[in-house]
Image (cartoon, rainbow, N blue to C red; front, side, top):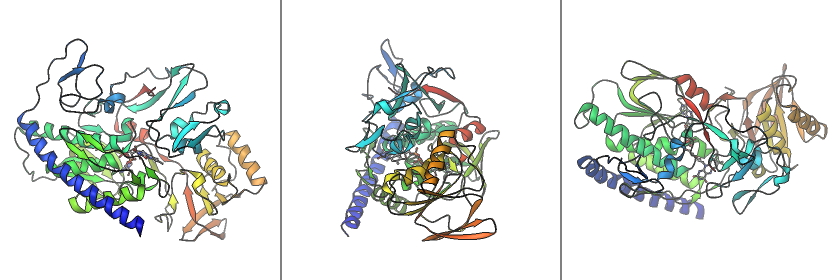
Length: 483
Ligand SMILES: Cc1cc2nc3c(=O)[nH]c(=O)nc-3n(C[C@H](O)[C@H](O)[C@H](O)COP(=O)(O)OP(=O)(O)OC[C@H]3O[C@@H](n4cnc5c(N)ncnc54)[C@H](O)[C@@H]3O)c2cc1C
């Protein structure tokens, strides 16, 4: 009851803040439209603000004119490195405590148990001597809080090549949020808003006048993804009266939904002078989700869920966006797809149940459960091993093949040892037939097998965001991971 009241209270407070933010936004935008800041040529030791174009000192953290937080452009402005420029050798991680959100993804991803630990809600290198340089921690970290270096030389990360205005090498296609290289909810919210500010200005210039309703079915913008970046972009587009559509492959805020239950979020208030404030207070993921739902219900923002964008093609003067359910045309496309990609699905009855996940986060939060892991690659094996570690879960690994040869040798050995000591039960040549609330049915040859079940992890690959970007024609570059 207390949690319900707290969630309700948080939802009301946030809604009031958001409403006031949107009101201020209208005023600020009207003001901005009247007095578009003239870009002043920067002198020595100065550079233009990526937001307002006015000259600011090179070392500034905030623009003194429009208040933009310049850290938001740290990845966009970093010089691209030649491919493969990273130093050879075993990389060593270092953790930026101010970016770490204590999700434990790195602890789970590290194959060398005990190297990393969560202490006081932050990841630390508790046994650096055990680190053998797998670099899985940096890959798994959702907020890029872990940087890797070899002999003091920073390693690189692959990101889309994006300009200060979030536009890619394909004019009209923009990338925002975590997909652009910077994690954190607040950054994603800020970028989603800024990109639509920019698109609106551009559309206004193109039409040389106030935005007019267009009779055709051509959208002003199509937003892909409804995480914090996509939702913020959608809210802003709604506020400006743009013709927009948001498509989401799963449910609204799918990444946040997949956090561990009751995960405490580190979501600071998003303060941008001139725009006003969008407040998302610290709280659980459940509270944040309920806030988003309240915002959507009250603003009428439209998101078409369970509709995955499969392809974006350039037409003469617009883009054709294809999903399994339809074909849309838009002047601009905002990719707010995050970094988790599109997991391959089983396509069986019951897969939509909340207990089915496509990623394991915080294995230690599962205790005393019947868990089914599906897959035969490294991710599935590592998840099964992590879930069996405590000895408190009953873990079954279902694989449609016979052997695990495509996994790394070390994982094969560990899995064989776990099977021998019966900490993991392996069902080879098996396929999931149906998932129910408290059980699953597997087809093992011609024989159906029913298992008691609390959680299912489907780790059978999928399309990475990098593959999506490449097939769309977006340039990907390597940039140094932040120090
Ligand atoms: C376990 C964990 C804990 C975290 N804790 C915190 C925290 O405490 N504080 C914090 O600030 N940050 C935290 N983060 C990071 C934060 O969640 C991300 O930085 C943020 O969600 C990024 O927002 P986004 O909108 O860019 O991407 P996402 O939130 O990932 O949203 C992308 C959306 O796009 C959809 N999508 C992807 N591909 C397609 C497609 N082809 N078609 C249609 N839709 C598509 C996805 O389903 C998803 O809903 C955490 C992350 C994880 C994994």
